[in-house]
Length: 142
Image (cartoon, rainbow, N blue to C red; front, side, top):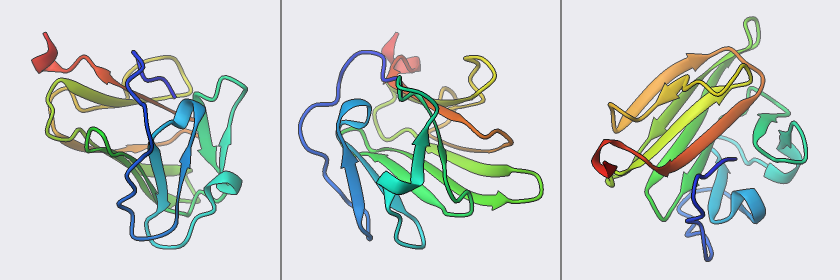
């Protein structure tokens, strides 16, 4: 995961209704939870390489949420279609309009879904690997 400047310090405040895992390193202060079923995150999410930026999920049918408690930002992954490999991604920016969260697929650094113009947005993505970016560069930042 790419966070721009380092803003993640201290323990995460888990507000998920099911068991969550808070990772250190690239996932410092991030809560990852299954939306419907319990999700063993350490066995379910896989990183493409040692940089730990691009990730995918072992069982793509499992819906989950990644929460950034300090900012109120979230990424929801759901509605996987096994025929097409597509899934729905919802991004929620939180109340701080300076914060921006976007997702890029494995093909370049383009913003495939972005909170630049909306506090909450959903898009169907058809890629195996996802890269999340979160940092202070929203419209109110400038």
